[in-house]
Length: 602
Image (cartoon, rainbow, N blue to C red; front, side, top):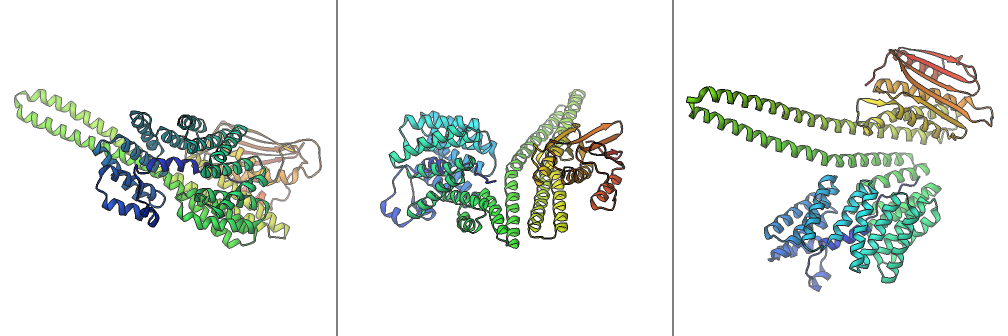
C-alpha cells in the first residue's frame, strides 16, 4: 500500500510569500550579493523606519520557520508588538497571520483558528486586502484536521477573490487546493477536472510553480487510481525539471518519495534506495516530521527486500521514534492550554485573598457592628472555601488529564515496539526453510499482533482502563483473515459480541485464546476443498456472574486429542488464569466453549 501525502505544500507557499514580503524594493546589488537570513539581519540592523522594521521582522520570522521555531516566534512577537504600537492595521493582520501559522506548526490548532478569524476581521477593515491569503490558510488548517468539506469552502472563497483580481498564479494554486480537498472527499473525477484546468492555466501563462504542483497532484491521483506507470511518469517529469530548472524542495521530495514507494511495491529496491537517499539528503532543510516518518518506513522495506536486515531494523526504529516525536509535539498545545488556565486560576485566587483581607480590615474599623460583620465574614469564608475546593478539583482534573495523555503515549510506544517485533518476525520467516520453524515464527507473529491490538485500542479510545470488546474482536478477526490471506467469500465471519468493556488483563487473555482458536480454524478446518462458503462464528456474552465465549466453524470436525501441543497448552493455561472451563465439540464442525468465572467489567 503506497502512502500518500495529505497535502502538497506548493500552493500554500505561494500565499505565504505574498503574505510576508516587505512593501519596498531592495537595491539590485544587495539582491545579487546576499540572500536569506544574513541579508535580512543586515538590513534590520541599519533600518530606521518603523513600518519597514515590521516587514523585516516578518521576513526573518518566515525564514526561521523552516529551521528554528523559537526564533521564528520571537521575531513574530516583535512584529506584533511594533505593529500595535504603530496602530498599523495592515501589519497587525500580517503579523497575526504569521503567528497563526506558527501555532499550526506547533500543533495548537484551536489557537491558530482563533487568530485566523481575528485576521479576517482586520483584513475586512482594510477593504478585503489579503483575504484570499487568509481564506487559503484556513482551508489548509481544516484540511490538516481531515475536515475536507470546510477546507473546500475556504479554498472556494480564496478562488473567487483570485479570479476577481485576475491573479493567475493565485487562481492556479486555489484550483490545486480545491482538487486536493475534493480528492479527500472521494470525488476523484471532479478533482481531476480541476487539475486539468490548473495545468492549462499554467501552460498558458507560464506558471512554473503551479504546473509543478499540478504534476505532483496528478501523480497522487494515478496512485489512488492504481495506475503506477502514469504516476511514475509525472514523478519523473518533476525530477527531470529539477535537473534543468528550479523545483521547490518540498515538491521534489514528495515526487521522489512517491516514485520510491512505487518501486518498493514492484520489488525494484535499488531504484527505490537511489531516490530515498536523495530524499534523506534534502530533509534536514525542511521543517516537517511527517516526511521523516514516511522516508524511514519506506527505506526499511527496501533494505529488507535486499536482505540488509540490521539496517532495515535501524530504520524501523527511526520511523517509530519519529512517530513518537510527532505525537509528543501534538501534546505541546494541550499542555500549553492547561498551563495557561492554571495561571489564570492562580491570579483569581490571589484576587480572592486580597478581597478577604480587605473585608477583615473593614471589620476591624467597624467594631460597633461586630455581630453583623461576623455573620457576613462567616458566609464569605464559607463561600471562599467552597470556591477554593472547586478550583482545587479543577486542578486535580487537569493533572489527571496530563497523566492520561502520558499514559496514552506509553500505550502508543508499546504498540509501536510490538509492531517492530512483528515486522522482525515476518522478515525472519521469509528466510527460514524449515516448515515447522517457519510455522512457529508465524504463530508467534500472530500472537504479538493480538497483543498490539490491545494497546492500539487503549491509546486510540477515550477509556484507558478497559477494552471495548466488539471493536477489539472485529479488528482481531480481520487481522487474522488478512494474515492467512483468506477471502471473506470463502470463509464468512459471524460475530455476536455483547457491548461490554473488559479490563486489560481479561481482554489480553481472551484475545490470545481467540487468536489460537481462529488460527486453528483457518489452518485446518477447511483443508478439504468445498465450493460452499464456510462460516466462522465468534460469540461473547454475559450470563449472571459468568462470561461465555464460543468459537465455532462448520468445517471438518476436530477434537484436540494431544493436549501437549503448544496452542492447546496455551489455551488451557489462559483458561486457568480466568478460572474457565473449556469444552470441545465436533458435530457439524468444531466448537470450543469457555465458561469464564474470573473477569472484570469496566
